[in-house]
Image (cartoon, rainbow, N blue to C red; front, side, top):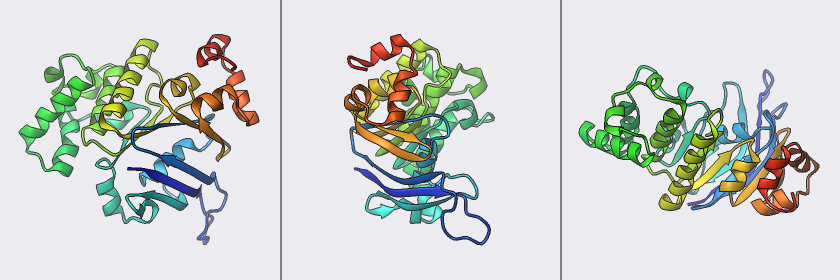
Length: 270
């Protein structure tokens, strides 16, 4: 199933205004398709994360989104919160940048993975716990059965991010949004997380939106890439084309800012 974003603008209206004043995101168009990975890149504050939050109805208080985010024949921006809550997680999953903040510090890992399964798929506690263990094993978490009873602070950063992936993927969503999923992880763990993501996109046939400032990560996973600058999408195309023959000045600047070795790893012509 595909997801379309059309003319999406996000702003913080002034008092008494009903429109999008002072837009921080303006006129964004995007398409996500099943089995495909779309990378969103840009410097911090370019608007890429706000776009993803608008898609799942989690914009900051006071923010207003206009335009269309069409999924399953409906504009998600118009959905009542109750319907959006049912859509969130079950149809559109999200992996957040900092797993320690995203996970509940007072709940055991098994309970956090089981929660969505019990809510959306009406599983019994025992069934959900079994599925939670299975998903932890799929995320290559060592001693999965034992880790079910661990708290987030008892896990490493890489293990917590794998738990975040398990929570998002356990419901087999049609779309997965991963916002900087490998930030602050060492190179070895980062490679393992990316391999798991790539494997699940292939096996489950989901559409993945990968948000990252790391062009190397995007080059590895994404078939297409969109470049953001000051709240606007300034360039989009096949990943190899955008990285090897960038048209926008800011895209060229992002590539030029990479260390020489990283530029070389992107491939010829960069």
